[in-house]
Amino acid sequence: MLREITKRQHEWLDKAVALRENVLAPNASEIDEFGRWPKENFDALKASGLWGIGVPEEFGGAGVDPLGIGLVLEQLARGCGSTAMAFGMHVNSFWPLAAVGTKEQNEKYIVPAMEKKLQATHANTERATGTQFWNFLSFAQKTKSGWLLNAEKAFVTSAGEADVYWFTGRPSEDAPLMAVNLWYLDASLGGWDITDEWHGLGLRGQRSARMVFKDIEVPDDAAFVADGSMLETAFPAILASLGATLIVNFLGMSQSLVDHTIKHVKNRVHQNTGLRLSQVDMVQDRIGAMQARVDATRELVYSALDLAGRESLESWMVPMIEAKSAVASTATYVAEQALHACGAQAYRGDGEVSRAYRDAIAAPIMAPSEDWCNILVGRALLDEPLFG
Image 1: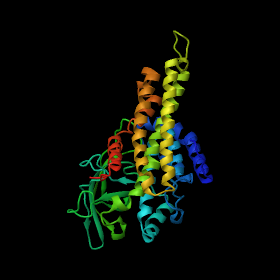
Image 2: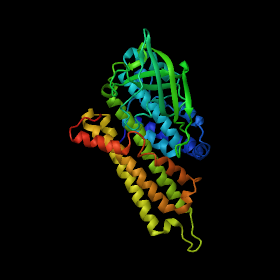
Image 3: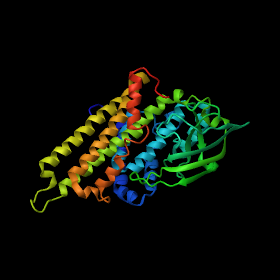
């Protein structure tokens, strides 16, 4: 990465590299093979000093630093994609909550969550609206003392494992589809059920299950956005946190695929020629092209994150959305080149190249999808409304 980083960013990066090398990478294959929740990885993250990244220090977090958080998540994703995705959801849940919450809300909800090292995740996606993540059919009912929450949510990462759900829905049945509230939902209240477990092609340990939330009553102040304005008031924090977590995760997974491809071709020898695959010109060409593509995408991603930490939304909104499109395209390209470079061995399904391949190819469809990112960039450039 062609830029200077701060002392704190160095410290975070060193911790993330240590976690990748000593904890995440050694057990990534086993987590993938059995599709199990990576509890030991989260125990290590909680002990690392990185658990509160994305939350201001005044509310018990480690600080808000888009570039620094991106550096952490790339390393985690290079070690274990499932862990990085679930931890990323934790970070990009608490980050916007703390950004839009009042001082009183943050002191009541966020500070204790940081002290107890609670894990958060999104209960956001709805099957009925698919990749149009800004439209919601679910709605809440206002009660005398708070809100009654009901919804079916899809692809809830860390389902059943999280302590806190970032919960979204319309403020009332007659509210427009894009009128969105944001609630802090304490999982210990119960009222939720997992109705369809996660059986992903890749990212098999992240437990992104379908959940039903039924008749859960929360206090009035659990609504961090109560007037349907989440897409306006929380958008800068949502987009910055998305860039530093989800987008960077797929950058890290792409680099992981390059790393495992390099390892494979260095060790694979053709008996008829006595040559390692790494000595074949065509393989060398593919490896070089893969790394060049990842490096170019990394510069776009980190430039956008750097701006997000210093400038107003207008200066980095389009580059950040472009970064998601670019990283999705890069992951797809690198995945194809890895198969060509490694041959049938990469297609077996039980090796490191295969695991990294299956993780990375989720990039184009993970919301916001590559298609929608391109549409949103086009709308922004043409001065059209982003959402609709």
